[in-house]
Length: 124
Image 1 (cartoon, rainbow, N blue to C red):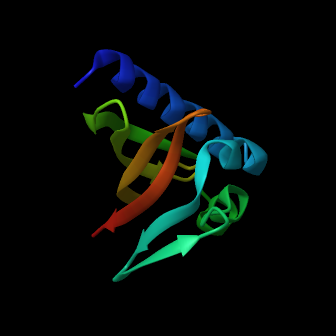
Image 2 (cartoon, rainbow, N blue to C red):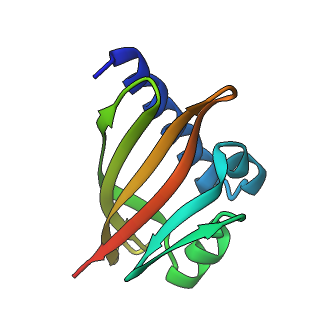
């Protein structure tokens, strides 16, 4: 695994996360290669719009922040990279909402690394 490509992919993921937490859909979309593949429960969809609206997700879950995060690359080369992230979403009162793990697929484009696939699992 190239350390240079690994660092670039993680930096792109961190920028995505910052945009997500700021509810910056233009920023998120700037890091996505459409159509994006969204792997849902039992199906995959090819979408021309990002499948999640951060503000709606945060409001519906009363999500304040995420703790116990663990993010790493799980395979990167000069053309493609995988990021795995997990954590615990909590409310302002520190009550646990859910534990999750997520997969993000990135591809190298002329404009830099772009997300092309996303999937998450809410753990029981």
